[in-house]
Amino acid sequence: MSDEVVTLKEKLRRLPDKPGVYLMKDRLGRIIYVGKAKSLKKRVSSYFQRGRVRTLSQPKIRALIDMIEDLETVEVKSEPEAILLEGKLIKQWRPRYNTDFTDDKRFLLVRVDPGEELPRFRLTRIKKEDRSRYFGPFAHSGLLRKTLAQMRRQFGILLGDGTPHQLPDGTWRLYDDVRQELYGARTIVSAADYRQRVEDACTFLEGKSREWLETLRAEMAKAAEGQAFERAAELRDVVFALEKTLAKTRRFERIDPTRPTGDVDALRLLGEVLGLPGPPRTMECFDISHISGTFVVASMVHFADGRPDKDHYRRFQIKSFMGNDDFRAMEEVVGRRYRRLAEEKKLFPDLVVIDGGRGQIGAALKAFLGLDVMPPPIIGLAKKHETVIFPDDRPPLNMPLNHPALNLLQRLRDEAHRFANTYNATLRSKKIRESVLEDLEGLGPVRRRALLLHFGSIDRLKAASMKEIMEVDGFGAKMAAEVHEFLKQDEAPETIPVEPVVPNAPSDPAGS
Image (tube, rainbow, N blue to C red):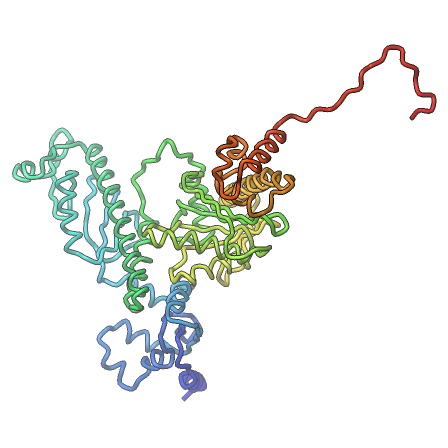
């Protein structure tokens, strides 16, 4: 036997009985498969058990085993952590056999070819690199077929079995007379009118696909919570495939006139330079703001189609600690944000941008690890040289300063910075206004806090009457009157005494 075989056997012998991820390599050192295991020793060794290859029913697995010449393993603390790491490595390396398994023929796709004069909605199990638009994959073929049948009635579209006939005037008869009565849609249409039907049906189907994606994510989270990790990993693969398919679907040549072309181009370029499956139509950016460790706050801004979506902005006060620690602050706010989205079964953004470098990215990933959910694509944007930092082994990326993709990231980051600083300034201003109570002699911290809790702000307290102040625990008539009078004096404008002018007064010869 060669030294390589001996080396592989030695590695197999030394495998630990612990959870982790394994990477299978071919004779050229290329990673051809990534898997996760509750026990690396048991799982990886099972590939090389005597007689296993002969009894395997799947040709793909037999071919994989024949190609394995080396392996590498990574130990982790738990099986949920192994699931997260496996998904990250599959995205990073895109091994040949993981891709084959993800695109397995168990799942159906809907294919629409815009190159046809009358595009039909056909079922397929293989996605090709062509101009067609694909929807899916769909795990339940029966439900999909019923959906398409309903769409034919609702939108008047052609399925794969359609046999339209062109009339002498150039229009098309889509169905025979019986189907016309059944479907209730005009059977004679122009090609342009029919393409509008197709566009409407695609919009409907895309919405159904995204509902399907949310359902799959919910099932994946439920399986992980119930420690059904094999099921969670299987669902994760389907989610990955569906996300990839939806991100790369192509609309017919229609552009929303309200959406600037520059945004479309910038999003497309950003997706390409970052290696994303498609343009990041939804992005969220986090920034931390503080003054020497005080008034520590964070902001999250949300961009949709390259533009601010202020209804989804969020701001945070740090709750888990006091002091100056940007990493802990980032871990806290990222965890709070996506824990809530996961609990509400809402979609994660296509891209998360962290204002900072590798340390801040690590803190964000740690938050996702604590949640036991698969993170969306994450990058950091370091201010000094506007460098894009990746969470994996890819080198930092520096784009030209006039690159549309970088300019889009800068707008996102600057908006997060502005929003964080505004919130920080608001809190500081509020604190300064509240500190005026510290100048009132005899009013200790307990009663100051009681006043602010009761009224909510110093401005409301200033507008309160003496009777309303007396409603606060610990305030009698005397103290309420003192507070009321003190705040009224604080509101009065400052006056500067002016000496009266005496006509022809002699000057002071001493100049005093």
